[in-house]
Amino acid sequence: MAVFQFTIPSGTMFGVSNSQTVVTADRGMNRAVSQNVLISSFGDGYEQRVGDGINVKKDVFNLSFNNRPSSEANLIAAFFDTNAGKAFSFSVSDHASTTSTIKVVCETYNVNYIRENIHSITATFRRVYEP
Image 1: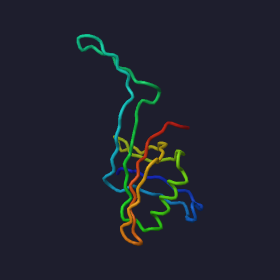
Image 2 (image 1 turned 90 degrees about the vertical axis):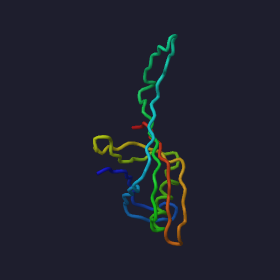
Image 3 (image 1 turned 30 degrees about the vertical axis):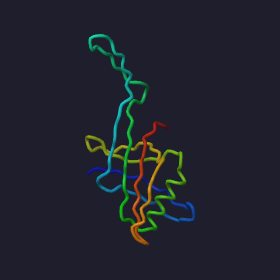
Image 4 (image 1 turned 180 degrees about the horizontal axis):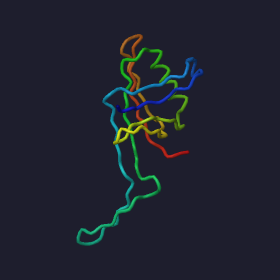
């Protein structure tokens, strides 16, 4: 089974207290992959291609956390605010259903207030290569 989740450590963020929480993305997420490739084109359609850099793969994940209790949605939003510009670990399943942990940053997210106590969040995670 595919796994797409991250862990919010215990503590208090922006006045929201919590114990360690594992947050799993809803089904229907989107993963866009592109490769950094240098291309040198010559005459007659001939070209050479080579990977540009050490880590040539770019991953962008569009996730949603729909119809969550407001306390959980507020905790997720507080985690994104606290980690603005900082990488955090995100567990993903690959082609062979093997789970690996990568580093991501969340630069944008949206909160949709469904009802007073039910909210939804959509977020964009971008993979970064850091220790």
